Image (cartoon, rainbow, N blue to C red; front, side, top):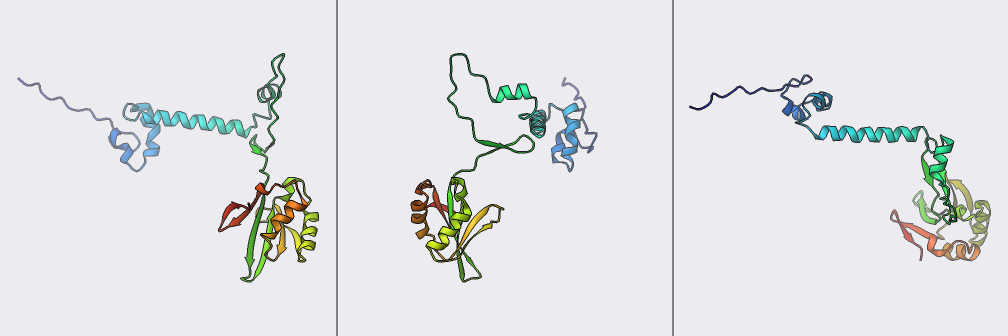
Length: 204
């Protein structure tokens, strides 16, 4: 004789009132998650993993916000700059970085010169030169030399990102590469780039 079928016990979510296994299809799955983790974790094992990952990210953000690298002078300093073992000499150069508020680190800007031709008012052409200051060149002096060399107006202005750049009137984008290499030999030609169609391409 067959056994009498037993009634199936259905676990209903206390948040959305749907059966627990259907919560993910309901309108408030995000609100259901805490209840599901506590009462129906076997149906949603990935929720615990998701919660742990969020917890780790939150702790990481909190550590950055309090500037852990600049606080706790002894421990943080030792962790950032370990003492070399006796008999060894440290050959690693300190990384050239800049610390920002919150303990975040900004690496030193890459040394390169960017040359871009800009057409304004549909007729007026300007050659923009960016990055000479990264090679220790004073922009005011460079502006004067460029204006004198190409017999045109040249001035130091602030660009869209508030960084100073040199605006030279006229299209001198290709002639300027040889001039830069001649006047400032510390600027290698391999570090000079053009902006063409919105893309950065090597000048050589």
